[in-house]
Length: 286
Image 1 (cartoon, rainbow, N blue to C red):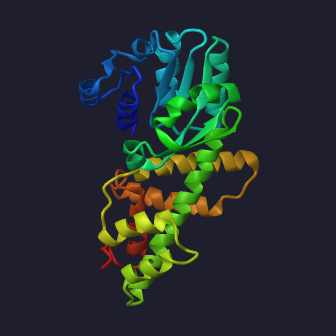
Image 2 (tube, one colour):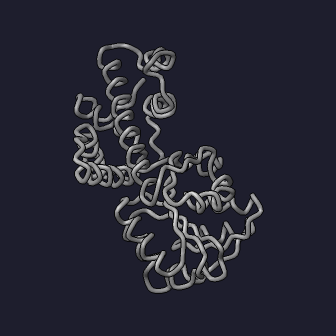
Image 3 (cartoon, rainbow, N blue to C red):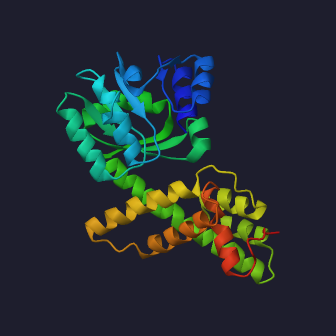
């Protein structure tokens, strides 16, 4: 998702320096007008704001605090915006470490998947000080359409965990509903059409329901990443004393998908697990 987000910043007129482990993405962004950097530190040198978009907390720690990391080069008064999805606890630790160096930090995880990143239509959930949020808002506006300051450091990550709980549970419910229709001899496409007009209607039923009907699981958001995100949610639930029983079950289903070699499929491929448990062997809806 980082590549289209960086492209949107270039299109918005920002001077963008990019670094990525995959050189192909960097080359494409250079063709779009960005400047390449050889390391995170090189990307952060002379930057006012650094944005990181990475898969998990260890990646963020390495890129920010590791050798040739962002923190070694970002000057006092600079800002780090972490748009990765990681735990609120790690976010607060990083924020405190950077504050000791005079660097501001916002956690700003996103929802909207690959399409939202391409269309600059992401939902961005922000944690941090209001003054820092005000400073960063024009940048975030080039990336998303719904931008909300949730609270202090880590609050954005809590909101993202809540988002992933709702999304995964709804995908699971849609998968079960469409499988129920098909196994009952009823056209699941017509069931989906009817449900879209009632209280069950949702963006997930609209988009992921159609994916299930088409058996199209090219990734917009990979199942293995959602599995990781639900681990974060369950950890947060444990710390807060909140029962997340449905979330725990859906994470097990995602784990089953990963174990079958489909961790890079879209998270809507949860339908395959439901179908197999229902004796359909992952067959497509019709």
